[in-house]
Amino acid sequence: MTIDHLHIIGDVFDRGPRADMIMEELIHFGELDIQWGNHDVEWMGAASGNSALVCSALRSAFGYNNFDVLEDGYGINLRPISMFAARVYKDDPCERFYPKILDENIYDAVDPVQAAKMHKAIAIIMFKLDGNMIKAHPEYHMEERLVLEKIDYKRGVICLNGKEYPLRDSYFPTIDPKNPYQLTTEEEELVEVLTHSFEHSAVLKKHMQFLYAKGSMYLCYNNNLLFHACLPTDADGNFSKMEVEGTEYAGRELMEALERVIRDAYFLPTHHRRKKNCVDMMWYLWCGPKSPLFGKDAMKTFENYFVEDEKARVELPNAYYKLCEKEEFCDKVFKEFRMDTKQSHIINGHMPVKLKDGEKPIRANGKMFVIDGGLSKAYQKKTGIAGYTLIFTSRRLMLAEHSPFHLEKEKAAHVHIVETVEKRITVGQTDIGKELQVRIDDLKELADAYQKGHLKERIQ
Image (tube, rainbow, N blue to C red; front, side):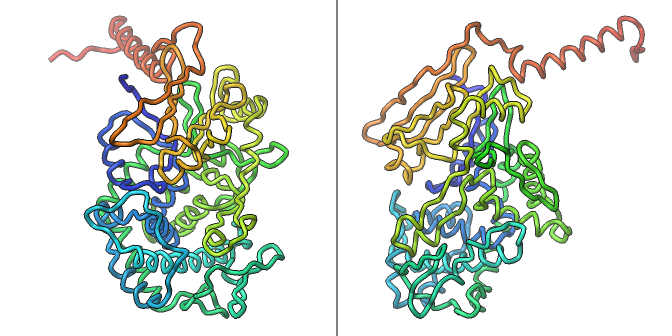
């Protein structure tokens, strides 16, 4: 199959190994675009100098044994965090923080015991920085995520929504119960060093600039509306309003306002008055309840580490995910983006489709496609497959369902034809075809002007 144009519905940096290698492949691919996911914005924010996102990116990499992407891929010096963790958590088994070994680091393996200490060290620092971010921005309305102040450190319990839960790990040597979000002097120095590494990595800078050049919050392309996660919506089906730099936006206007912020976070000069707020907003887009890139009420990272009760760890999806199963709601989304309600499709990623549990990627009678099926190994036990590719040709729309990759037995994808057009689509009917037609019309008009003498030909 010849690929004319590739669309990536976000999250290049989600959990899998060697995102740096994937980015290099994409840079040399040719025609493509990317609709940013929250994991992409996590790294984009880290590269912009957001220390909370630096720690978040490190925490995820440590948790999934992806040390090579940090050290070999981006030249991030991990020796300072390794030394800090070995000293501070010397006698702590850090049992909750052992990395998930999905892919072995064959040439530069990290001792799992040491990896667990590094993992816990960076997680605690991240929770402190998250808390400081929430306190600095009351407009985010995320006070419920100020988890460190909800802990009774003497009793080893946490109070969430009026209910107490015992902690699975209550060893917090760097937390002052009276001021739980205060970094120690060593932690401050460590954060400064790590943030500097992210900001000044030449390879990371190259990859982030590519993400910015090829990326966007959403894309309308050949009657397909592509965006990563959701269009924030309330239970009544109204597009949720969100304050961005003092102004409320919803729907398409919200996506466009947030795209401006994302670009300004990276490209504004360091001392520009809006720079810090834009960089901070990247953190909200990573995990905020009204973020179109996150699409859930809360990111329960702390609870997943420290609370046994699964009910306390539930992350509720935005109402969009239930509503988008209805054709009338999809039509409302199409109208918001000025698209044809009869011919258009919504294409999303973000939420892995649990095929083994009966979930389907095709919804709203074919108007909606959710094509995140678990390309990353971290999701494949939940989904039962290894992701989807949606293929759009001049004759039909097809969905390829991929199986987990094994070197010893490569399996071809199962391809399902989901839609066939009555009359073959011509180049002239595509978005590129329409752009070419405008250029042809301009050239014809120019030639006509010369032929009629309206423009004088220069003769040398």
